[in-house]
Image 1 (spheres, each protein chain N blue to C red):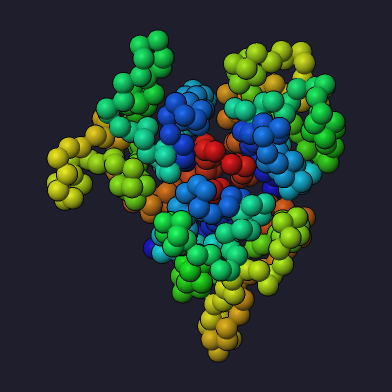
Image 2: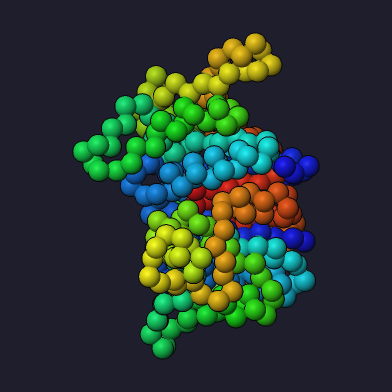
Amino acid sequence: MKFGIVVSEGPYTHQASDSAYNFIKAALAKGHEVARVFFYHDGVNVGTRLSIPPQDDRHIQKQWTALAKDHNLDLVICIAAAQRRGLLDQNEADRQGKDANNIAEGFRISGLGQLIEMGIQCDRTITFGD
Amino acid sequence: MATLHTVNKSPFQNQTLLSCLQHTKSGDAVLMFEDGVYGAASGNALSDAVAGFDAGVKLYVLGSDLAARGIDAGKLADSITAIDYGGFVDLVASHDRTQNWL
Amino acid sequence: MSETVKKFLYVNRKAPYGTIYAQESLEVVLIGAAFDQDVSMAFLDDGVFQLTKGQDTKDAGLKNFSPTFRALGDYEVTKLYVEQESLDERGLTLDDLQDIQYEDEDDDYAEKSSIIVVSRSGMADVMADQDVVLSF
């Protein structure tokens, strides 16, 4: 079965991204397809490559980047939510005249249409949020 | 055409779990996870309202979130079933839609 | 755009302004309207506060997004289900909500209300009739 996942809370503050991560691993282990993960609201903050958690804690962004690499996942960060919160890829940084980008490997920035498209194309849509 | 409802709030924090239960239909399932697992324990002021909710709705709780919070799975009300993430995935797949009560 | 038409329900259970969920929910609805799906919105619990009239955010220094609800008809989002019990519990009546209308192109563009008041069990029926439920 084809799953679409929404993550709508930021890392560490809320358990949502951890729950989504565990859910996806279990779904993949059962042979389901995870067609896309869409990060919205503060969930976009999962995708910053500048996060430095203490060494005795999990590294949420790196977990997602590794999962995406292992399973060819499509991790999409909402552009409107990202711009509000200061997340940019190089393309957006250039376009907006900013001096840095901060998107981690394995994530891409795109529009809200990707969320709707996911809902249309997937058999099930599940949101992890607050 | 049944629905899986998920609740991730303690019922002592707000009305989300009770609101969810009031919007279920016979044949639906409710999964309590994250802070929602506090709704699954027996012997508290809301246990009767939650565990006693009998409208053809099955109640589940995510075992790993219970364990993380130090809740003894033996303290669950009889009507509530503990599952793992694989069980969560199965519930999503076996219901027509998932409604996440955020 | 897409040949598949699914029933999308956007569930709003949070008050506006204290958190961003209501505002970013509306942004999803407006973008989603371009996909020609069967769209409904549900307002229950504190979500009914989103629809009240007279919101003035000037002194609070916030963006007032409440006028956007009145533009939803232009995006062919014309089914706003509002739960009666949620209104009652909060001491609200229909008169406290904005007048949100759409032009019915199948009825000589007559102006009709987009707000559909339903009971709690009626809201459960609406929720059970969807393909995709997105909650904010």
